Structure formats: structure tokens, C-alpha cells
Length: 295
Image (tube, rainbow, N blue to C red; front, side):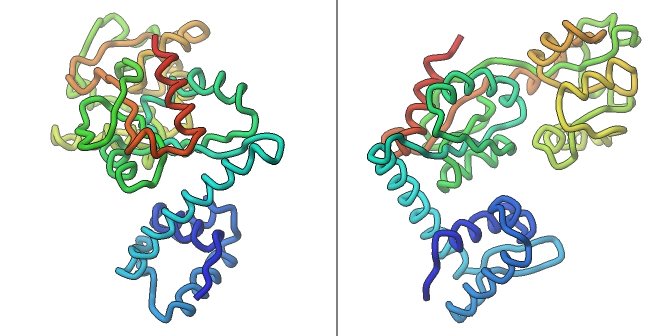
């Protein structure tokens, strides 16, 4: 039974994505090549590693055992690469960050100086819901998580990161633009402009609407908060975005932020990780940079 690091990395990506197709994309492999690798791994083991269904794949008991060892071995390989990088004329490495949607507004600013100072380091950012991030960081899926401060981080180590809030963004001539604040339930009769339904923020808002017993009327799905603001400016619909986004976008767009009165709208963002001392060197340096950059 011989599994190379490419096999182990692919298998980890497949399980975490819940799909061979999406796992192959994350591993930068063609679907046919990825499927062949997975089959060869199962043939070598003599047992299935995945349960395949129309909705995706889930690991068997053997697959869960392999996943645990794969994560450990890939982490050790990454550490080895970083430790030996210094002898090759410059350290190189990758840091995996799991972030909720709200925090992505702050990440370019937080990462720019760090990446400029570490040209051989790459940062892989994946968007997830805060409660999912806590579980994945605890399992060792990512190095650093950024979550809402209201989420129970359990035994993870946490540090404050930023404060922000969700607001309703509307066009400057929209009837709601005259309001200073409004409740989320009061606007569920309106058309919304939002991000892709699979995004963390849209799943979060959809869940909040469902808890009120109302559907979220998502009229248009965009790829960024800036695009949401642009369509809100044209009165295509209203959107829920970070207040920091509206402050920046309002310099060039005719939009206005209306505060949401719901308690969940206020977002204290928190850095979470399993063990600072056990992080790879570059991940530790990134955490130190993000903490020193607080303002």
C-alpha cells in the first residue's frame, strides 16, 4: 500500500469538499485523474474509502482513519518544506485560513503587509460559516480561523481581530434610505441582492429568515459585496453587507447603510487556532502580524 503526498492531499480535499469534482479542483487535478487516483487507493487498500451518492461523497470508517493520518502527514511535510526552505536560499510555505464572510472585508488590509514581507509564502483563504470553522480548526483542517465572537470556540485559543456590523444597503433614493435603523424581519418582503447561495453569508441570512418563518427573496446572486452595493445603488434590490463595505463603497456609489437592529448584526470577529506553538512557522508569524495590526 503506497500513497504519495499527492494522493493524500487529493483525498483530504475530496472529503473536505464533499465531492470528487470539487476536491479535484482544489487539488488542481483533472477529474478523470482524480477519480483514477481515488480508485487506485481503494484497490491498494482493498476496501472502499468513500461512500458515493448523488449529493456527494462521505468517508467510510477506513476513509476517516486515512483522513486523520493524511492531515498529520501533510502538516509534517509542509513543516519539513518550511524548515528546509531556509537552506535553499529562502523559506517558502502556505498558510490555510478559514474565514467567515464578514472577515473577508478586512483580510486584504491585514494580509498585504505580511505577504509583501514574505514573498515566498502563499495564503489559502476559504470561506465558511463560523460554527463550521471552529470544528474544522479543531480537526486540523486549517491553520487559522476567523469567526464571529458569538460562536463558542470550545478549547481553541482565541484572540480579538476586528469589530464590524451587518447593515442593510439601499440606493440613496430608496424609500428606506430615510431610515436610521430597521429590523431584518421588516424587510423580508423586499427583493434582495446577495452573494451566491452557497456562500457563508447567504446561508447565514437564509437561516435567519427561516427562523422567522419567511423566505429570503434572493433576486440576484453576485460574486462580491461591491457588486451587491452596485445593484442596490440601481434599486434592483436591497442587500446585507458589512458596514465597512458601505463606508468604502459610498465614496463612489449613491448608496446608504441602514443599521439592522437584530443582535446578530453586531460582529466581533475573533482569531481562533488549536495551539499557537504547534502552528507552522509562517502561520505563527501571520497570527502575530494580525494581532499587532489591531486598530
